[in-house]
Length: 321
Image (cartoon, rainbow, N blue to C red; front, side, top):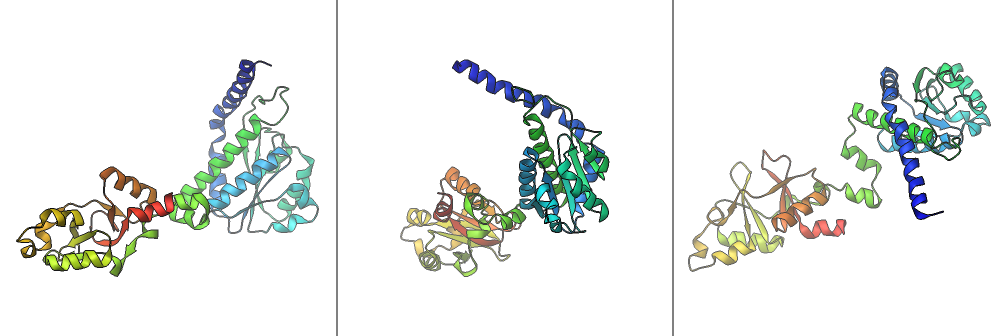
């Protein structure tokens, strides 16, 4: 087979699946909204399941749900029929994925859920299927051509199911007001955890901050700068707000016979660049590189200008590189 033919085959698969995806907006309706509302009230876990390829999609959706603030677990319907139905409690809800909606492996699971009044959210492309008829809430996907060469292997249908699952997860995140700080708690390790590091996680605070008052003498400024080793000193007013900054470069440029007659206010650079504590470390590094500076003072909010910490470019590089 020629290279051009292989490339065209790949593009044809993508185009076929895109056609199915474009129809999905019809599935985001009142039933979708009801499903999100039900899932947001679950006191236990959301059990996500499916047969075959749908099972793989269910596993991924469950993983995404767990990592975005909704406790979830994937379990095979076959395993549940052979003793694992005990993983489901009355506090849980079920999401069952089946393109045909008539997989016999789902029968025992559906009967169990009905017996114990456990909510079933069914996702299928067959509106007349046993699954959709048994579901408390049904999300019906549009009929779409499978992208495989014989039109049978689950391709387009599994992609659509995955997108529906992602839509549920993101809608739940927004309903629960799931924040970056919440996400960090669930992803403390690896490169993803590092990418989510915030300034407040690595800043130097309290007595480690190089701070002087605006009336401080040059002797005090020099002592503070030398003692804290940042090459910077922040200057605050009587309201404890940061009104200026003095760098070691500022001191070298201002040295003259009257140097020790100055106070901090006379030498400081006005309007220093500040950064809020919840800013990402990678973003603070970009700010320092852009402005050709090596330190940033940290504040709760830009408006109050009260310093709560300081970060050095080396602190950022230690984690980002």
